[in-house]
Amino acid sequence: HDDCVRLTRRLAPNQTYGFSLGIMASVFLIKILHQVPHFSFSFRSVDESFTLQFNSQYVQSLLVLVAVALALGGVLLLTIIITWICQCCIRQDASVKSRRRVRQLSTLLFIISVICFFCLGFCLFGNDHLNRAVTASVASIDDVARNFKLAIAQCNALNDTRLNASRHINSLSTAVRKEADKTPGINETVLNEVEAIISSLNEEVDVVGTDLAQVKSVLSGIAFLEQTKLYSERIEVERWILCVTLLSIMLVVLFAGVIAFCRQSKKGAVVFSGLGFAIFIVAWMLFAAIFPATVALADFCADGGSFIRSHLSNYTTDTINFYRTCDPRPSHDNIPSTMAVGNISDQISKIHNMEEKLDALLSKLFNQSGELSNGTHLFADDITRSLKFIGALETTIACYAYRNDVNVMENGICDGAMLVLNSFKLN
Image 1 (tube, helix red, strand yellow):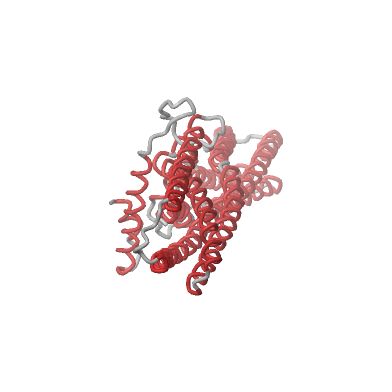
Image 2 (tube, rainbow, N blue to C red):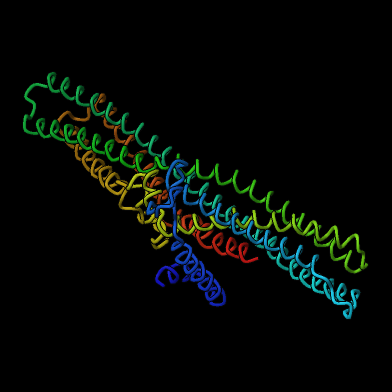
């Protein structure tokens, strides 16, 4: 309920009810399908969570579901064939007019064909909606991956500036020592304070480098996201083409059968009856593929955390969870706690204050030496650029930049696709 409230609070009142109803329906279907028993090839219960490793027992359980669906379809097909053979062998009552029986049978088949037309039309409609849901999820994954890439580039730029700042600090330290050696009667207390500040600056710059490495490690999940996007695009294109082709063939056959019935063509009715077997086989093969896929999707949506954590670090997973539930207020400081960006910003601000104090002490100690002034100017320029980079990085990883995309990633797969796949099975 809380998830529905969070997801729908920004929708219009007339949209909220339908959206919440769809969410609740998909959650209900996920819970039901997640309870489907899983058995391995040795007919032992499988408690393994969702995985895509082909040699795992979980994949074996999905193949068992495919085999069960095909076996059930084979039994139904055999039942139909036996029933037809028995009907052909039974002697008909002479008192019943054969023409009337044929007309009744034709009418019944015509009605069934019309119903099948509507079902296939609904399947085509659902196929398009499934394509839109998956496409929206893929687009959101691409947006998240692109923003992660931008954040990594900003981290690299900030790290380059940090390295320059470290070199400038070392150069400044050497210049201070040279100026101190050339200056007679220098104030040792102030000089010691200057050297302490320079040493502290070096340490703070190193801390920034450590925090940047931590941020980049969190953003390293981009490789898995890009791989997911690539495979999802390929699979979705092939799935859409296959479904449209098979459903179109069924529609053409049904249309030909309806025309044959309308013309009362005996040959057309016989051909249509024969093609009916082909339609039955194709439809059941689709069911045998869709049912295990739907069960796997339900397992992923209900208990896919271990699968995701096996490909992403805990920090990256927690970061995505933050974006899924955060408040997308327009503020650059609304960032995940799993990244040390806030610490980096504080460190750079601290370095900036220390640099101002150092500049004042150097001016007092050496009376605005040209070499030292140039060194402090270079270091101050590094700090200014670092502040700009950290501000841009905070904006890039802020909640409002990811909230919608992360929710579309989840809703498109676990809500939209779940509803459409179940409508496929029913039709």
